[in-house]
Image 1 (cartoon, rainbow, N blue to C red):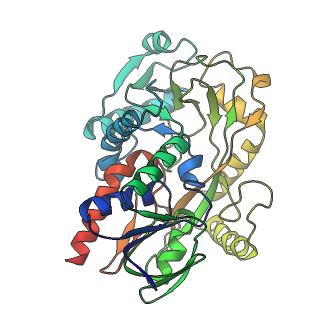
Image 2 (tube, rainbow, N blue to C red; image 1 turned 135 degrees about the vertical axis):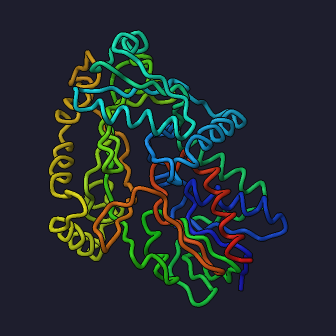
Length: 399
């Protein structure tokens, strides 16, 4: 039977970064990554916005705050070293009205606590930076926010992992385990230690190992609309002040690495884990499970799921999405937004007992396995230092 010192389930950005960090710390170890798809980064890692976040949305006591600013620097340096184009355009966070001002001040406070470079702008300053931006009295500018094409990063990580002696096994989805023996679509492997970075299925894999007893993945679909405007129509990303009670950032303008613009995303409740288009990847079992969970949330006091669902389902309408975006930027022509980007699914973690969405990264583990349960945004940005943290935790557990 094939063996490995470390087996990593999932070849997304977290799985590949953890595998590389394990190999770096244990040069003589055999590290094998198992991926169920026929290429790396086919889910959240390759379908995210591509924004490298600065780290000012998160409270200072969170893992997201701890790793985001450092992750931005390290991933930017990695892209430079691999000659992957980056757009270092920065981000402008704008206010719609008086009610947004306290939350804008809170973002500034969090940013300063997290060591993030943030500039407080007047309306005039904001117009100078981005003439099309609308704001009420104040705005925040984050110069370190950038964007990249995620698939380019994923291919580079895969190439580097393989060149470092890591085995990346594609079309090799996890099927189950018996003791230390993992069953995959490509055969069995005896693993000295298993790392679960399975994204949308991380909670299910974790329960095979006795973990994730209090957590369940609640999927949300993210849709973006491309603008037909030429590259350079916006100078910077333009974001609203978000509702800090939930983990979503609201409909915004993203300037891609090539200067083109897209608006979104949605956070539409999905009815199975990989509900990208139509009945793709349909699972009756998942449909029943998630509908029951959503029904429970309608009766829960954890957060107002019903209001969120109604608000987000309306964004299936292009007109509605464009109308929300036009609150942030002048000169938005609805006729210029006709093409949907490839949809993504956010593997949002839910605390089953309280009915609350989990805001931070969550990990669990023991001497035999480690489980990454909530590596959602800004997981892509945080991936490199977060992988170092994960490997440090693995070393601590195995002492």
